[in-house]
Image (spheres, each protein chain N blue to C red):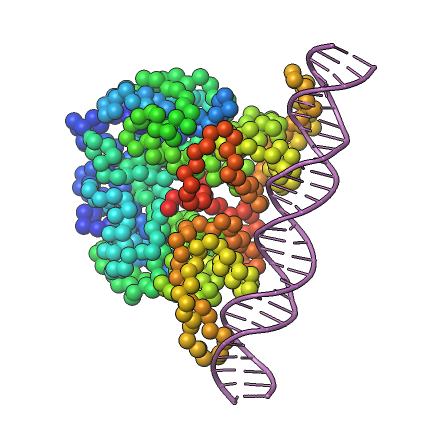
Length: 263
Length: 263
DNA sequence: TCAAGTTTGTGTTGACAGGACAAGAACCCT
DNA sequence: AGGGTTCTTGTCCTGTCAACACAAACTTGA
């Protein structure tokens, strides 16, 4: 930072170009076998009444990450700590907010066992929406939040390939089938149970067996071993997203996936 | 963004918490078989005299990316457009700048055939430094720029695995050996020439043959075919960084690499 | 009790990709 | 011509993965 012609040397804080910094959070969870995100309905202009990502201004003495967690809590009533919080990117197109220059730092999070979201703060309402709705632009979102969400979805999809984050969508103890459902839902693909089983059980310290098995269920089936997440954060040789959708067929026939980081 | 208790609704722009937004650019190039980055010597306090990333304040009507390109040009005298420019992440720890709250959006870039850097703007001096110096903390950098650079280095290393970006380090036309040198330098690893050759030539539209071959050199050797970059941006099945360093052995024996995105 | 259905987990096989290494091709120099 | 260097292709071998068969353990219903 070799500051240029408007040098803020501490003597005149008002000399800065007036820019506001906000954070926004794309929170993912899996409900009803669908990947869903948490949105709030805006209670103020601009875009009053539209659905938007929870977020808001960064306060003087908090970090960006703290601001993201605080806004998530304030605006949705969620008290549980997210299982994962990671920076996605920063969006600062000059006119993305009609009032003034607003640069927003977007985060994405995983939340499992989501408690009932309620409105809070300036948000009139909070609710979950399926990502397929957002991807189809069926919902008119505030600001550039639609773009942010689409990039977050791509990020979480690619992260499942080479990290163990999928387990964060599950309860603290889970079966391999449950874990497989996460992949199938997020990728919208069918995965061979046998090969998936081998893959995750042989990946070093991805899963740790608790020694227990599931109780008998209706419709029968062999009881499944119960696992908890291991310490490994990365999968040595990634899983591959195959081009075999389970129900809907969208997939713009385009470039291979992007992989992303900072976590 | 459901803005919270200090709502800037356009009527009072001064009600915002005073935050400044800057951009910083980590520019990579390969010189003397080493991965190098472009730094400037700060001409002003704070950290006057220290080496720092080129960067500065975002102006009211420019995008973040435009600001990054402008600062790179102003502070280093580089006129060539970078071959690649991509957001790395945003750093906003409350006290990272002693003067006031400064949130910086970091970018990273690839520049080939770097013209002689010169100082410009507020920068007294501009110069290239080997990344091994920065990784070894042999240079005392301003602000948190050391951390930013380290994350950028990890990013470019991982991006070479699954993208065709390596070609951006080369001149517009190049041989497979030159391309292999890029990988070897960035990864600090030895790569088998035969297998590398097969890999990149069979990867769809990674390379396009110009039909030419190199002129005879001293020390002999068979003339190499000359290629230009293809249109493909991603490699179908990634190259792998193997644990075989060419000269120095560092490598903290830790977690697998992170892969990153937005580009 | 037995058959059929369901889910979990293991075995087997064949295709393919990648590393190691040999060898051929095309050039230099002496 | 012979040896050295670099580029390029060939061969072998191993490990991985998808596909699919099948065994294991359970429930339901007759």
